[in-house]
Length: 55
Image 1 (spheres, one colour):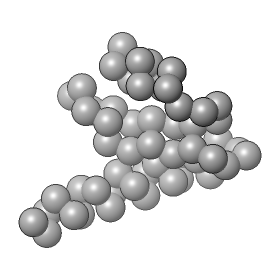
Image 2 (cartoon, rainbow, N blue to C red):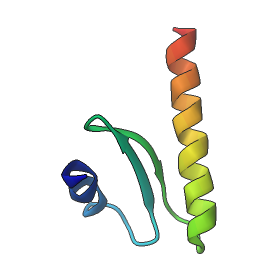
Image 3 (spheres, rainbow, N blue to C red):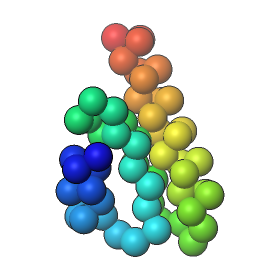
Image 4 (cartoon, rainbow, N blue to C red):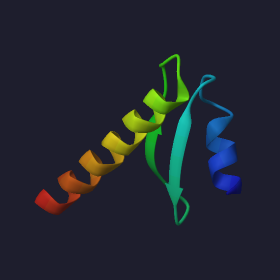
């Protein structure tokens, strides 16, 4: 959790970060509502995971 807080300090307001085992999994920023930001972060996390499976 401390890692996530440290990463969050460098990101704009209204952002969501998903962290697992000390690694940033997904970051969502730039939307006016936090629900949209959370959806973006989840989409990025799934896309990143799918890319890892392909390679």
